[in-house]
Length: 96
Image (cartoon, rainbow, N blue to C red; front, side, top):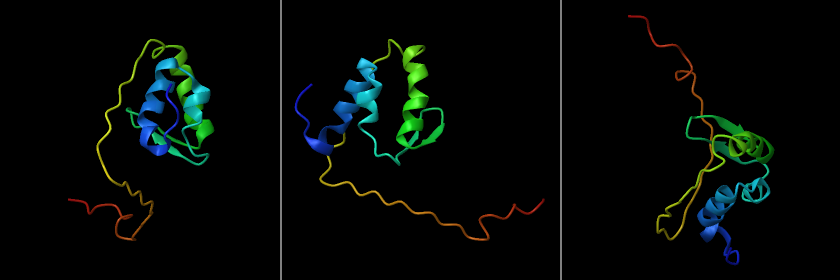
């Protein structure tokens, strides 16, 4: 694989690790406290759980899978993490 270019080539590095089924390389792409939601909606928190969730599928049903990522052309990406709960959003809807 080409020399690491930082965040700009993360999609290529992700696809490369996936296609080689290299879970060590896959793990290296995530922050220790990362979150991951797969295509079925399964949520994992932390790189260890993310990798643990992928190991069995890469050994079985995805063992011959390949991934191609398309990357949007953007100048900057901002990610904001927040958690907001209001008392009204936690109430059950009124009964009809």
